[in-house]
Amino acid sequence: MIQLILFVGLGAGLLILIYFFALSPEPRAEGGAQALVEARHALNSLQTGLLPSDLVERVFAEDDLHFVVSTTGATVRELFLRERKRIALFWVAQVRKEVLSLKQFHSGQSRLYARLDVRTEIALALSFARLLILCRVLQATFYVGGAYAAPRVVGIAITAAGRVCTVSEDSLAFLTTRTGVLHHNAPGPRVAV
Amino acid sequence: MDVQRASDDLRRRTLGGIPRILDRFIYLASTRDYNTGLYYHDGLASQFPADVVCEALANCHREVFHQLIAAPVEDLVSQMEGYMASSQSRPQDFVAVWKGLEPYRVAVPIETDPFSAEFLFSNFKVALAIVEERLEKSPQSLRGA
Image (cartoon, rainbow over all chains, first blue to last red; front, side):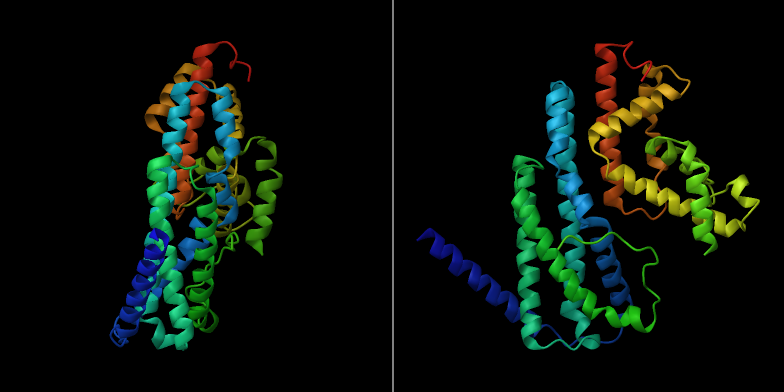
């Protein structure tokens, strides 16, 4: 019964979100360049700084934990766990911030540049909502249980973020293919999707 | 093209003679001017234009930075012990200075994303604590590391 209530609540929440997404005011071209630059920056930040698989695997790698637990005393162990918790919280906060920035772009300016059909927009809105909920879940889990408390949720969040990045990449593709102005010169590491 | 050649030259000659990633990282950071953020290398400057040398050094710096981020804590600890042993300072002084000044904070490449930088600083902090703990347990053991 509790599960049913939770599912109904979640469904209602998502419907409300989609409703507001659909009712959001018609985007205006003014300030569009700034929005584009911010979206591109958020996307680059996610793809090269926050989601590369090797980096995320390193942050949550249990071999570091095993090494510290098996070779050091209590003081260093506590320091390590505290540091990893701080880093995990910092990571999820940064991911959330950049995802919010991308979401703002999509709910505002992207319609001016990328002709997305209604189904794609709804799917995207759901992806953003799911990802933001996952970020909150991760924040709460890291806060309570530390960096190693939810490895599966980390993986799910990374996959969801990767999907959102792919759609955003498509929406911003014209910017790089037509002008190349905002294209990153250095080939960044690949995103874990 | 020139940048690629200069980078290869740097990797083969200068960096090839520096065995540890941590030493390379510190070395490359030390070739950067604090005020301008530009990199200088006299040897390369005799073969390539200044802007090419600067870009080649910056590329190698970023490369080494990513290698350090990818290193497990255990590896970082042994690199730090090796670096400490190769420096002329007493291990206790080295640990005290690195804990106090955190010199690695000014050694990251420009435009490094905040998360990667913070992760490396955090790993350095933990590695330093492990080195310090080992020193306290057996002060003689790290001298010849």
